[in-house]
Image: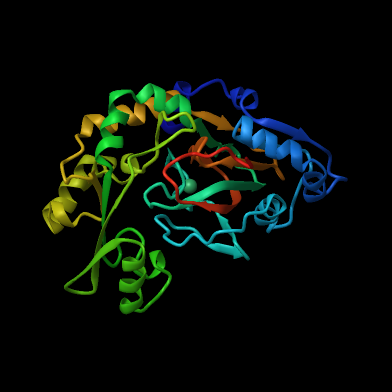
Length: 329
Ligand SMILES: [Fe+2]
């Protein structure tokens, strides 16, 4: 229950409607037809507001997320480096990250731990949780302004992500790299600028460097990394000590440092989480809703829930420039 009480710190529950472009319809209309008919408005909504919600169409087709991005064009992306457990549904639609119900999934920019990421994400709500389970979103420009000097330091130094894939802890390398073949892992890693090292007992360790920030259209820095998700301070204190004692501080399942190898202090990560919490807008789902966001305008996450929650997600249009260009410019 405590997890739900903590929602008191987030903004008013209907606040998200002030931030998204809302297109409403009814169940007699096909959501994809509606999107095709209003494509200009959707593109404008994404360009000017960064988030579009289609509500009332009651979409049930499991591939709706991918098909809705197909309407906008740009090609669908595979989730090539899964950092979290999720399943393929059909085509290029996936389930949203399958973390335990009681856990909050921190706000993040999708794949910001890589130097290429999807520009747009579509979420399709199929089953709505009995309680909680909102997809949290936060305006990246506002978060970035609030982070101040913390953001400057990340922008200057970048981030190094280290992962140690050990059987039974976190997700296995076979899932993360979508192969059983260690040689293929090495080739995928090399192709993506990752340093891969095999430790005894088929334990894989990877490290790679990525941006701490990207630039907005006008040159402002935008927070664009997942250091706050990977940093070891996310692990509860007793587990952190146990993992450190068992494997050594340099072989934790996941961790992040500044790109120069220096430690990111715990209190910096704590401040980042505090700022993110202050900017959280929980999207209260209705069955059949489709939410499309610009991954460089809105972060996303998930609040804890009770009951059954089914949300599908798809990603489109690869972006690998460290600059945000106008959407559909
Ligand atoms: Fe995500």
